[in-house]
Amino acid sequence: MPTHILICDDSRFACKQLARSLPQDWDASVSFAANGEEGLTAIRAGKAELLFLDLNMPVMDGYQVLEAIRKEDLPSMVIVVSGDVQPEAHQRVMAAGALAFIKKPVDPDLVQSILTEYGIEIESTDQRQEVEIAVEHSDAYQEIANVAMGRAGDLLARLLGAFVRLPVPRVSMLKIPDLKGLLARVDEDDAITAVCQGFIGAGIAGEAFLVFNKSSFQDIAELLKYDGKLDEQVELELLVDVSGILIAACLNGIADQLDIGFSQGQPTILGRDEKIGELIEKNVSHWNEILSIEIEYAIENKNINCDLLLLFTEDSIPALNERVSYISI
Image (cartoon, rainbow, N blue to C red):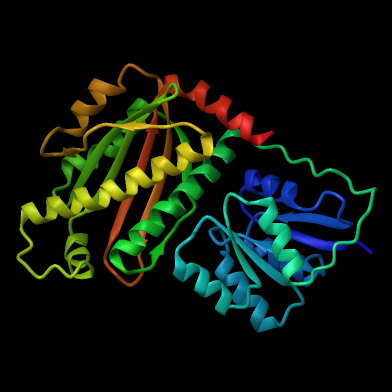
């Protein structure tokens, strides 16, 4: 009898990577779920003797799935596969009953090692059918951003000594008027401040924006154990420090996956060094549309929220698509 395997992940790109990481001659029936709710339905139907579970998903996330499995005592061995590599994320899923934790992107040798370690029998067959999964560029972008986001979140968590709640990244093609509307609040709202930093490499270029609510600075200062006066200069230093970590780590995470390198420009403090409208007019106004990746970071139990917005120029999209197509094969 084949082993029933369920891969629960909202990214078709991640599903394809993981399915191809399984032993090729394994007598297994592989099925997929796009969120935790679909995953639980499959588990209850007996389709998940072994479950590979993502954490950051819409509708129901991986933590909620683990909780439901434990409460209902469902018969499924769970291996978490996630881009959230914070030590606390690892600890939480293991405490919730997971057998193991694998960071994304998946290492096939590690998958094999874990299967062997836990005595999961791999019966061979020469009749297993290759899993075919069509992957759109937008889905690949989202998963690449998800992995990069996790690396950046881990660095931020270590800096602040806190747990960072990570979302599902939002990927979209924006027309320039839509972009201006999206970022206009940085100029118009005194409670918001932002840093912008340009990047370029391998025919790919763009701008990274980190948008902060100024009310976050008090909690950031407390986590960093800063006990001095919180004036405008200190807030500026905190903004530059946090933005430097998140922007650099996220760009490096994307570059590593695409096997390229990015050069980064000097950070610009929007509203002080330059207005957002001036920046857009100077850098991107002559394009029709841009690729946007938006990530919302939040610190658990703290009033700390920030938006990271990565904007890739219209001229960069062919080079990005070529790189993504290569790693999606």
